Image (cartoon, rainbow, N blue to C red; front, top):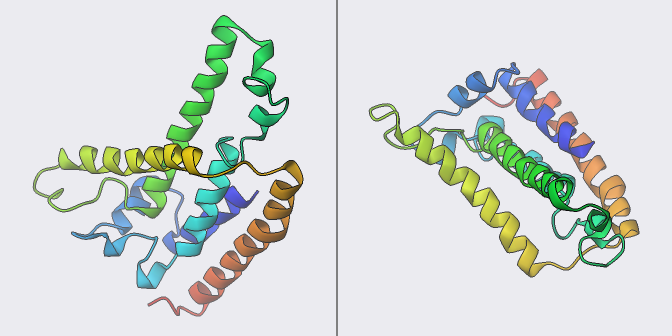
Length: 182
């Protein structure tokens, strides 16, 4: 739930659901125009909520509860073999890639970067670089953080992430309504 709520701030400030238009609103020669820290669209907290919720949604450490279900090999995945097992893991990695691409598009300016206006192919490399950063973050977190227990995850999600996501929406809507963002 917090994953979806964290996106509402960007949608409110952009005034559109068109991903191309959201990226174009973040265009600029430096990263200061990105929604994550742009002064008139400050969505840093929305980005943090999105990032934490995305890690939980993709079942990665420290939120990899399906894998911890039986504490044997790979959780409930041990009941599957061959192609079904491969499809489960491929789906998890495709989910990681999709969430990373969406974060790049909504919060980090998508394909925008220095020189994209004159050499458009650079946009592909900027976009892939930002996505690879998120994939590296997944790998780094897997190697450094311990796993949460189920009750800790539920408390964190319902007692911290959800209220902060709602406060982000209220703050963003209030600032947008009174036109205090610029």
